[in-house]
Image (cartoon, rainbow, N blue to C red; front, side, top):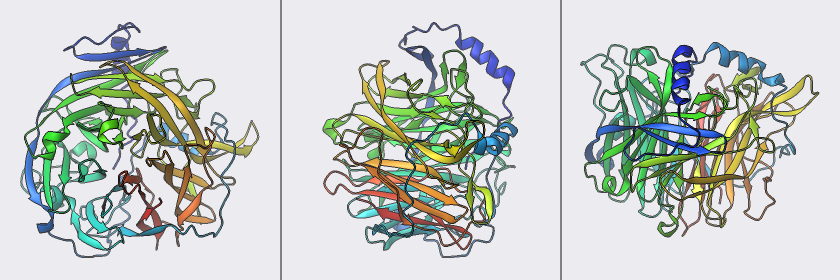
Length: 584
């Protein structure tokens, strides 16, 4: 689920911007202070530190949890799409936006060529896979793979397969998976707790699987209308061999300090840290307020012991103007223990509030990214702006994608980073790989360009020196796009131990049903280049779903097997099915 209510309280934002403007661009972090501030060139970034209550923990055995029985979707047209007038106007105008970045080197359409990639169908829409609505859109995606097992999550269930595609555990509904109690007061929501947006990863260094899902109950969100307001991050680590799973509930309201609920699950890890962030919407107004990040000790959680997280919120970036940040994505740290950076990295693009140089990301293209580093040794966080102005990649809200029989009907989201970014040293350099959706000019004229939805991919070279000093530069980037009206959207990346990067993404056009494709590049390839796309699976039908997704997923099985897996969705009989593939 995601909210895009852009009826922003402008006066409140101006007041916050004025408050932040009192900080000098060279300000430094004072230990124990309420703000952590880092200047990088002309951009200053900041956040507020807060105290979080202890998480609530319990332990279960997933092999004893009830398995769902198959049932057809009865309400699969249920949509969770939210938008504001400015967003809708930008989407409508995006196909001819003369400010969209120009692409070079469109992907070659492979036609009906079969890729030969091994894979199998995962979960599909049904009344039991998505019991809250009796079917749902979109599936979203969670994926975690070891040399022996494949764990998949969708809205709102988990299942575990062997690597040949045989189901071993589940599907198990999220409420049973986490042991989530029904919201209070009793009977306030007959559908039970509202849980959505799964993420997952496998930690090759410990052999544990991790999952995360958000719960929210709030009339402002349109769920749990008669229930007590709450916002919980449910996080679990699982030993698939034994079935033992430690489950934690983290309060995103910080014990009632915040009158906000979290949306859009974002989940990552390093050698010592579990990180989770959310886009916080006000319980009273329903408007977006700020991003929140929490960091918990991974080793403590692995043992099922009590844990209290470090919390930060109200992330800002200031230059010509000050902008509120959203979707600050923690990275998956896919390294050996010896190569762990010792910090938890996060990265964000600019989105609904524009960039700090005055671009709005809706009609004028935004530039740049911010890399953050949380230091568990002193519970501090710092950030660095990664400049992309002049010779770097720009990005702007894309149009929705075409499909057979319907023009701009398949959702492509905004300019946030969607798939979980990945930190790796496989190519010899410490790189964070990421992508986001953008409009890309693929033809037409300067006055009336032809703009298609495309994917901006990039790799940021990063290093961390102290609690506030982060050094980062954009090592390379590029656009994945096609000619004609063919769209590319919802990219997700993974690197292997040799530095080869894979990206799965969705695609559709007036002549192509929603399908799944893959691109890859070797570490030795020329900078900014990526190989031609190939199909993982082609959709046999168009979709009637107005919502197509929030994110797709990748996973790495570790250096011994060195396998990269991906999961995405395609359209079958008008609804979504998912496909899981091993691509290396």
